[in-house]
Image 1 (spheres, helix red, strand yellow):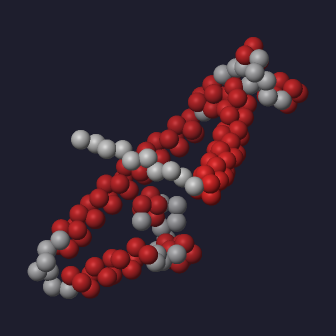
Image 2: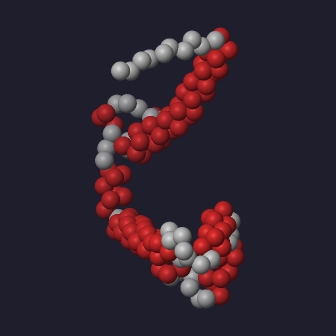
Image 3: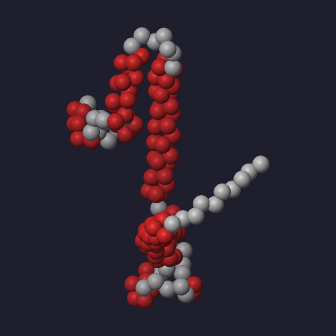
Length: 150
C-alpha cells in the first residue's frame, strides 16, 4: 500500500523553484537555439543563407552539403579512426582494470592497502599533459598509434 504525502511549499520555496526553473529554461534555450540554427543552416544553400539568412522556406533547402561531406573519404577515415581508438582503448582499459581488480579484491593480498592508496592517488592526480608529451617525445612515439592509446 502506497501513501502519498503532499508537502506544502512556502512562498520562499516557490520563489526559489520559479527562479531555478527560469534559469534552467534560459540555459536550455541558450543551448537549443544555436543548435537549431546550425542544423537549419546545414540544409540551406550557402548562397541563399548568405543573402537572406535563415529561412524556413523548404524550397531553399538542399542536401548538397551532406553529399559533399559524406562523399569525402577523409570523413570516413576519421570515423574509422574514432571507432578503432575507442574500441582499442576500451579493451585495454577493461583488461588492465581486471588485472588490478582481481588481486585487490582478495583480503589476504600483502600490501593491499598500499596498492589501493597508490591507485586512488593516481585517480585524483594525473601526470599532466606537458610531462606526458615530453615523455612520449623522448621515446620517439609522437604521431604513433601506441602514443594515442597510452
